[in-house]
Length: 316
Image (cartoon, rainbow, N blue to C red; front, side, top):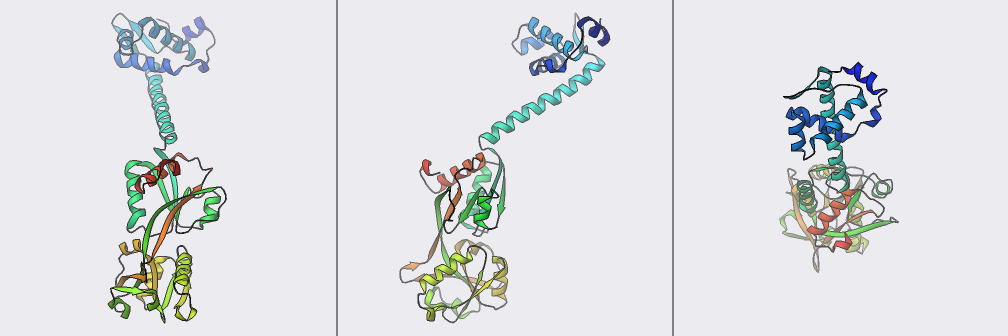
């Protein structure tokens, strides 16, 4: 039986560039079955082909992998180390192919979602739960930041907004709508009413965040109360919606929120529906994304949105 040195002398200079992944699989199968014949049968190959390929592999690496005998084959000491590495390589190749196929089909990857509504309850929360259940290999990153800048520079794949952004080369999908509510202290006089009208806000201080959707809510208030004499005082704060609720609890005023905010319990606060003469006031939400974004995870997310909100496939 030749050793590795004898093989080098007999077969000449070797080259690892000649290694074929199939040959690695054949060698691992032979080691698992302890026989070229049984390995060939399991892989539905001719024994001569498997034996020849393993011989070519040994030639390529300059190493005898198996001791052959009439009873089968057994890995040499050096062969056992080689086979351990071969198993690792084959496992990594299999994982690479699987992950690549999964990413390309939108079943794995990363998705960055900008949102400007509460995650405590409502449609966005339900949509994200549904998406993560169906695509559990995709990492969803949620961000609250400047919408136009984030979409333009690719920091966001998609933004859930209350007003379509002036962004060239983008697409938008209408989603759900939410009622506008007044958040106030439980002891506030307006809390005794089941329904509050916009005109009831005269004389109040309305606290709004300078972050989204504060601007949209202020625009809505202005449109509902055309006369400046009917409008409340508006206090804008460079803080999150959570801090706004703390300010309400401290007695600084009331605030406008969307329906999904009701899911975030805050001690001492209550909510009342805001109406005008035609009924409840609502704000619509839409999804917006860059049309040149080819992230497969975005495609799968748009599919979920389209299914949940019954949109035609070509709109998604």
